[in-house]
Picture (cartoon, chains in turn cyan, blue):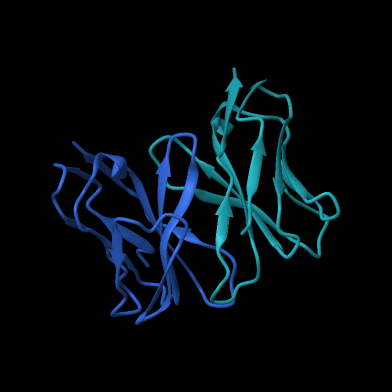
Amino acid sequence: GENVEQHPSTLSVQEGDSAVIKCTYSDSASNYFPWYKQELGKRPQLIIDIRSNVGEKKDQRIAVTLNKTAKHFSLHITETQPEDSAVYFCAAQWRTGANSKLTFGKGITLSVRP
Amino acid sequence: NAGVTQTPKFQVLKTGQSMTLQCAQDMNHEYMSWYRQDPGMGLRLIHYSVGAGITDQGEVPNGYNVSRSTTEDFPLRLLSAAPSQTSVYFCASREQGSYEQYFGPGTRLTVT
């Protein structure tokens, strides 16, 4: 089955700096890679996703890049703000059919220092 | 639309007790899943369903049962609660042919 790993497990940045969170996956057939943000006591919320036919996707201050050859993808947050402090999960999924499942990484805690 | 709803929000059980965590969605999604979230472990899939009457096991199914009699509801049953089942449980749904999952607000379960 798919195995998704996130590095590092915690990250602390100064407000205004950029943050980069990396994930690796094991199944070369995976073709969908979402990032979820979870604030304390809340549900995971999808913030950005990328499919395997795209190398990069950007949405305002966040972007995701995908390297299929190396089987890793990264979340980039620019101009970080205190409200970006949360746990971020990456995940990988193969297709959308009945047997496809979303496999999550263990999460990274991002702290933005004011 | 209410989206994905879960009840209760909090629950405390004694070892050996049984209970059902409720999950409902009003988006007519075919796929529904149950995850548990433990510190440092991410979200792990317990059971999932691809439609009414069809369920299958995920990564950590032991100690849990599910059924799917309607498209809207996907309850998770703990047959005999154990302290190892202390966790936060999330239900999620997605549309057939779509990747995006929608999560419920979660149920925090403590087993003493």
